[in-house]
Image (tube, rainbow, N blue to C red; front, side):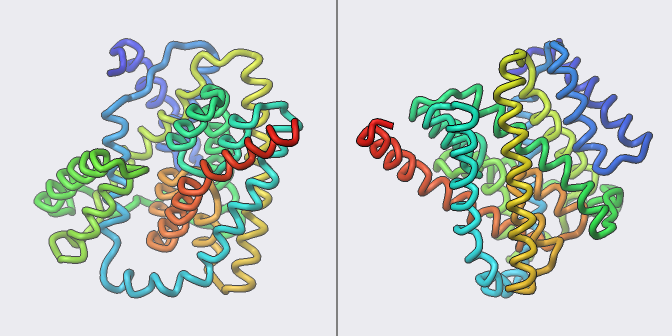
Length: 348
């Protein structure tokens, strides 16, 4: 449970960051404002705290938003994604083949830390695997946080420049225009789906559990709308805090080494991702914006937030991110152990 004084300070700084972004008209103010404000405050040494269980609960509504968008028409389209899904394993392999040597050789990290920092999987899963393999948890956390921070910050700028998307539109109907019974059902689905997924050990439980349960409710006609805009905005706010507070207590050495490594890796990922987006558009004729959001490893929740705001094809975006996460979570520990044995055998 977060300590209340630190939590109050965190929320105050996050609100100020959001208000500043709104005032000067920057994109995604309720995501990027809290994120960058908490980042700066944390690096300045202020005793910020994460929002704990409540912050995780607010994240569940992204899963609800995706699940409530899944209807029979959307399900019928999923087989058509195969021509772009085949790019996902190639994408993951290229990231590993470029990211791992960068972190291992150039930044001098040990095998486990470099490998699990380079894998474009879920943050919590990579930290668990990396810690079990003897990696540096703090280093991995900062590298992944920086990857997400850089990509989530650059993505809106690129989208506005390339496609002139509107990042200020409400991400859905307002609460006053929504059915209160449906809102209550979605809140219950968020909580039940999250906790049920946690109980069975599903990765990404806070996002995937609510998504699956809400998809069932949508396909059976129990609900027919997404969560109100106010709930999506609140989810953005707490996700922004979650990324920003990871920099609390950072030292000069960590800033130079781990954040520097994360920045270099994120820029490398951005170049790789843009190359894949162009290749997919050329070969598979996929929509540029949908491909952009599907092949940017900036965090599944963060990419879903942006996809909701810009009106992208949520099922397309989530399917590609989910396939990437399944591949990484399933195969990363196997590949990491094989590489460690090989290094021991060659004396590397």
